[in-house]
Length: 414
Image (cartoon, rainbow, N blue to C red; front, side, top):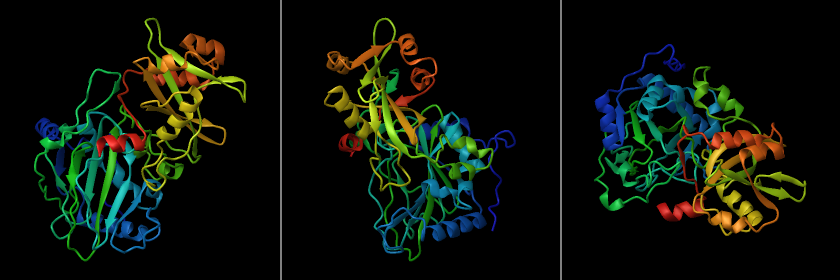
């Protein structure tokens, strides 16, 4: 069976139309619902596809489907026939971009299957500094049920206005940070009454609760995440494969921010020192190659079991750079770019030493030195990749957030 809608193309499709009043309500409540986005024949086909792939392509390899559990079909599994099209549905994309106020990037492709007897989940929000899917400063959840999310299948409850429990500390800072949530101010949870084929657009910081149901068949839905293109995840983008990219239509490919088949096998850190003149950046002299380079090196995945939400290298890079620079801990990092390197991809992060603590710690190291942009060109040559990294880091149109390792951030935000 063929899905009935055509791929999204803003040049050929008029905007679906979310009114100014609806946008204002979204800003106040943290969610917006569009009813009946998918017809029944489309939801039936997607349900068939997901239940087919969950048997062989689920991420939970340690569980025996269909024992009671939540199973995931997501990430690069979207390259399987029939799956990718939901991520570029015209109503989904237009609604997301209308509420983001910017073009969107797909940060997480997920379909969840809850089998009968699954206990549901706890109260939470999905802003997570340590994960690619949840560490953008401007992102949206797009949730599309393949069953009615009611008392039988298990509703999805939301707390109106709870996205405001986390607030920006300094909205004018070049790298944004947020407070821990004030949960004492959380409003009571409500059931928005999601039906099969509805679309719930939810701020990434809105708190929600998925209690269990009593159904004797699977509960299924798509849980897609999109960030504004100018607000990349602080932990770095999910690494889409070339197959996932090419599974999208020509118009929809713009939603996939990065794609490659090589592994992310290293990470580097651009450290900026604030000075009264012009910014300076730290390089270390590598003894093995006798050359200047950014701190970093081989870096492994932090959370390999979360197959649809991988790519963060902050924890590994903290450990590597900390040893190289002889500092206890670099407190945070923010994703800049991915660079092709020998045998793989190097994920690059940035850190701004605003308080001078790191600067004072490394100034006595004879294998480290600070370079202005012009000195970098003189030392490394005009074609070195670090110049593009510096230019990207200094862009003022990019909204960057604080990224942290899981061991740091989980303790602060749980």
